[in-house]
Amino acid sequence: MAKKKIKSKKKSKNIFNNLRMMIFSIVIFVVILVAIIFLIMNSNVKPIEDISDAELEAELEELPVEELAALAQKADDEALTGAARTTSPYIDIGKYKNIQESRVLPIAKKVYSTRTAMISPAANLIRGDVNNDGKLDMSDAIDLLNYLSQDGEKPACSNTVDFDEDGFIKINDAISLLNYLEKGSEIRKNIVPMECGADLPVIKPKLAFKVAIPLNEEEFVRGDPNGDGMITIADPIFILKYMFASGEKPQCLDAADVNDDGIITIADGIYLLNLLFANGPSPPLPYPNPGIDPTLDKLECGI
Image 1 (cartoon, rainbow, N blue to C red):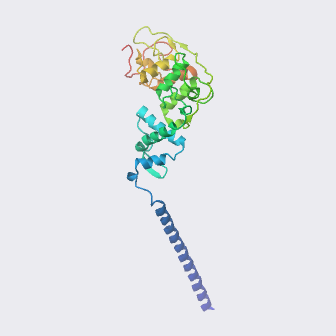
Image 2 (tube, rainbow, N blue to C red):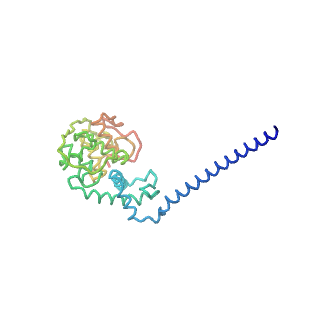
């Protein structure tokens, strides 16, 4: 009886050992198989430095037009703003991984231009490109604001002007376009070629706020950079033209610093437009009556 128990224990132990060896063999086999598959999949991948521009261009040509347009627009954004890149400087393009973005963007812009050139002239339009020069920049916002203020020329295509895509041309399109130009293409991804449709209805703004005119050169009203005693659409246009179109310098730079952050930027034009047409907050003092800037900064009046 004791011998039978010993034999039974030995048999159980052998079965356990055999099972353990089998599991171990299977694990080794799977690891080797995965390694072989990985080597096969990556056998044709070149080192990044060996990828030619032509190969990168061919890979970019396979991208959907929306992705290609986003890359081309990013190249324009960086050229326009000159801002430091906040995202990773490396991106993946198809089968090529960790390619320098600074290398990809100009090639993407070239591929996008070639692809859109094949579209008929009537369809080779971009939403927001008011002056139809093939790119989105501050000149489009200024042209749209000029048109809405009744001083500017009518855009060639209504669809391109309808930036918020609500079927009307109005001040909100200018505000949306300025927000896009200020914050970058990540807030809008559907900037792709489109066709020019029928003329859209236009809603031109008429709202104005009357303010007092300063009595001396040291005083000013914040938000009235042209000094006409009224805050109208002409004031954000004045600021944007001064900044981006070699326009007249405000007699009082503080008046153009609408948000009182000590510098004059696109944000000041947006602040005024929101005040006039989107129930935005009033500017900091001095407003609506003239006064001296309570904030210390480098901007001056009467110089």
